[in-house]
Image (tube, rainbow, N blue to C red; front, side, top):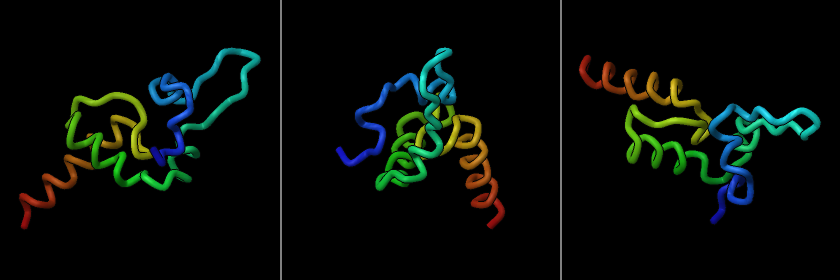
Length: 79
């Protein structure tokens, strides 16, 4: 309920904020950066989608989240 994106078009988080010509450009990363639940969103994304998720969640792209999880796994394996 407190998410900054709750009233926004979900498609913005799946195409990197690209919009149709003549539309107002919205940067989903900026929306996430100002969100009071960014950490919860990122955690939920990783816990529910794992490495198979898509779109921007918790201020990170799917590729960024995959790299983060791989880094955690590597770090935990090392010690």
